[in-house]
Length: 170
Image (cartoon, rainbow, N blue to C red; front, side, top):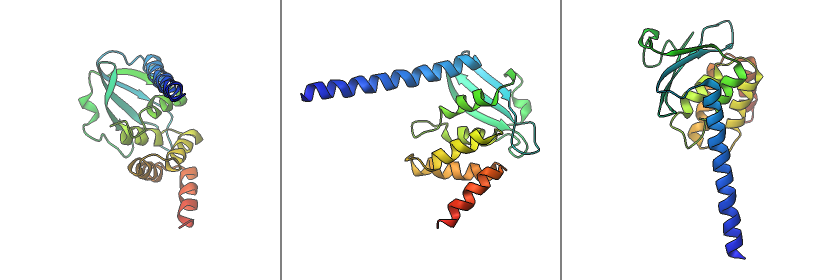
């Protein structure tokens, strides 16, 4: 009986891992981020600012760096002129962009902070909902703290309302 349970647990882990890899592959394929190099795209953003540009460096089919240039970031590590060879994907659907960044939030990812920052700069309730879900999850405390930080930076009224409620609980 123990062998059957162990086999079932291993099978479940394998199915979940395959689903995770499949989701990541679909997101990369939807954005066509398969070649090595820098990619860039824009989405509708929070507030009065309309130019958030997301840069992602891909190597061997996997993102290595996420950088953002916009109204308050002004390029975390470089200026916009340092990306002359990026493949510009243009204006991307907000949900598709959020889906792509969301897969890199988690304890397993070195890209969590940058992915949370990027999501917080997307317009709409979905971005705020994802941040709230991270804060209320059992994710590592560092990831949850970063979600709170990026919500506070987002200029979203819904994010501020949530943070007010969160502070009132203290």
